[in-house]
Length: 245
Image 1 (spheres, one colour):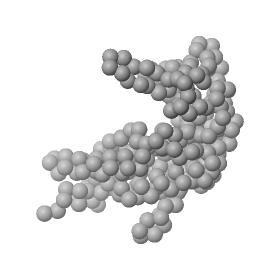
Image 2 (cartoon, rainbow, N blue to C red):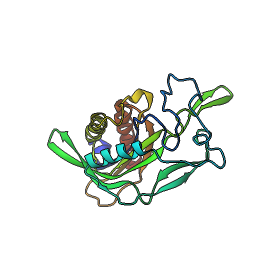
Image 3 (spheres, rainbow, N blue to C red):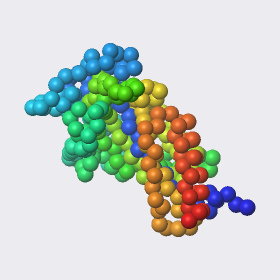
Image 4 (cartoon, rainbow, N blue to C red):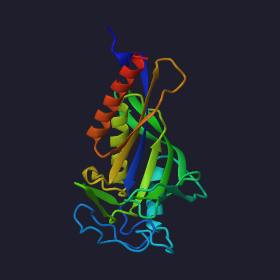
């Protein structure tokens, strides 16, 4: 009897968030510190904690690092890119919105070559854009604490096209991207400290179908093992659900 997954084709895309190795934050002069070692809230100011009336100023080195990555990923760099407010309310986001890019990102339409068993394959890159990181929450019994040292650290978001169709392709893409960022000296690759985080978008469709299935997003994965195991689990879950109608 065939496995449920045999009847379906996976479609997978990855969103990767990488902290940039700048000395100061994205929109203020606060030092970027190791959030796992520094005293909580020891590198903050009125700007990165969202005080009224403050004016963010862009970090030139962060833009340079982002352009370095965009060119290495064969992207087309925009002559004009615009920052926007991504509004959501959560204690680790002191302004009540994240400064990010949406309609006019820094760069688009690139690719990353990966080595697979069947040979080299290009995975499309939809967009590369700049934004700022959030603070970090520590949950205790009955209450939570927040450390804003990470708030405002420069983040580069790299969004792939939904062109991966197996866990093996995802692993080759994610490990290749990490190697590239380390080679360009823009990210430490220190995943256990959260300097590089993955979000996977996963769906299944009947084999031969031209219509994509219903997408599930798996958020905040910070190891290759977490990425591959969670996607494998989600594919099995969706296949079982679809097989049951």
